[in-house]
Structures are given as structure tokens and as C-alpha cells.
Image: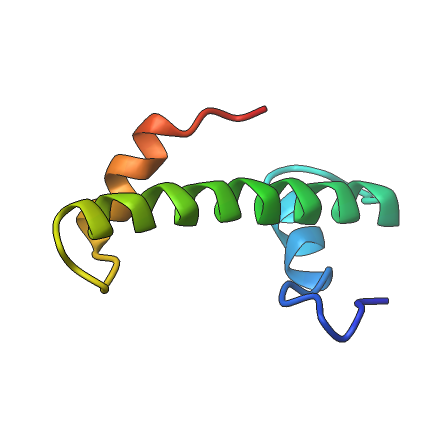
Length: 75
């Protein structure tokens, strides 16, 4: 079950796993993928925000996100 403050529901991650070949998916696997996706996404957003601020903007652009993705490594 998803906590009310959690913006990412579990079901789409289960579908992603199944659509990519998993025959069965444990709840733990879907939760782990969701957690890693959220953590990585938050890192990308923080990096992209720095690029926008450096450029004198308050709006994060697609270019900021793409650059941040290149510079944020998976942990």
C-alpha cells in the first residue's frame, strides 16, 4: 500500500517489470524499483534546479533535465 505522501504508486512499477519480461513480481521488487526511481529522480531534479538557477531561471527546462541525467550517476 502507498503512503499518502508518496507521489509514486506501486502498480506502474509492477507493470514496468512485467512488460520487460518478469513473469512474476514480488511486492518487494516493485517497492525497490519505486524507491530507486524516486531517489534517482530527486537527485536529477536537484541537479537540474542548480542548472536553471545558474542560468538565471526559475523554470527547469528539458535541457536542464537531460544535462542532469548525464551528470547524476546511479548509486
